[in-house]
Amino acid sequence: MRFSAAQITTLASALFGVANASSSLGSRSADSVVLKCREPNTVAITFDDGPYNWTEELVHTLDNHGAKGTFFVNGNNYGCIYSEDNVKRIQYLVERGHQIASHTWRHEHLPQLSGDRLDAEFRKTNEAIKKITGCSPAFMRPPYGEYNDEVVEKAAKNGQTVVIWDFDSADSIGATAEQSKSHYDNILGQHPSSILTLNHETIETTPNQVIPYALQKIQEKGFKMVTVAECLGMPACNTQTSPATRDHVRQNLTYQQKIQVLDFYHLNKHRLSMESMIPPLRAMGFTTICQSTISRFVKNENQIRQCAAEQNEHAKRASVVVLPEVEDALLRWIQQEQEQGHSISGDAIVERGRGICDELQVPEDQRIGFSRGWLDSFKKRNGLSLRRAGR
Image (cartoon, rainbow, N blue to C red):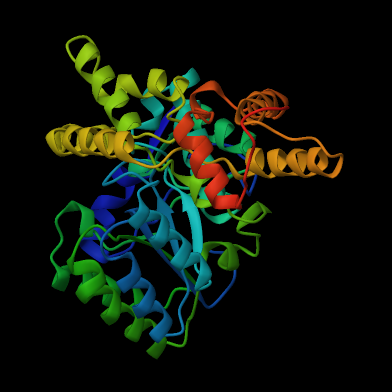
């Protein structure tokens, strides 16, 4: 069976500002699918489809009203979750005490997916949130509120509760700011025990007009504005660790690596879509690449290739390669030889340097060239005076 909370709730939201999802959507455990808050006198303010341009503005507004929000984020919907701006947005909202949860990777109609494609929608988003925040999210919201038994089972295997809503501001289906405000007025006028809201941070009027109004009205009614986890009396994360370092969150690609991506794109663009290019590119080592990243590289291809060419030219003129760990070991060897009364030639230093590179397993493309220029620079840097003869 397939269930669409969006279809069930749209008419009620438009008329009354409240969506009462049917309790007969299937026989599941109490924690499998959540339609409303459990804690009395609570309101959970939630936002879908981000992170986006107004995430930080929403956080400020929530903070100013003493409210906590829950952000159901996508991996690659309005933008790539691994972009520097989006990583900062997510980390900022979590640092301010708001909840992060999954809205899946590409905002697909989940009941139309199965197997690996369905698994990827969960797995990729959960991995991204874990890397960025350290939180393994305990909640997910299916796009469009659509779910079936397989979706619920997949969520359960990931340790996640499916969260729907019992109030829709209708911002995503064309409601004006004034209409969304009216929906909030209507639901508050019904004096419910609790409210589990649906809003979208990608609709500009929602953070700018609707939410400030709604928070004030909710405050006036004496509700406590909490996260979804708090309104259900459950933890927000299955596990919590330290976030990954920036290099593990998003790869900082060199110009040469960007050119590798571009070359792959041009070689395959007539047979593969950008989305289909992502798995083979990740297998090549570009582990966090998204469709938006490829698009950005293509758009800026001329600049990338020009910068790469200039960088290569600069490298040709640059001073010789220096590997501190190799030179430190080499200096220790020279000191030992001198203490034993041996005289050391430049050729002996070069020979020993190459041996140290082997011992330290320095990759071939990163090794010192051990040229005459390097030797002269090495002696000058370390104040060495060597004999041409001897060891």
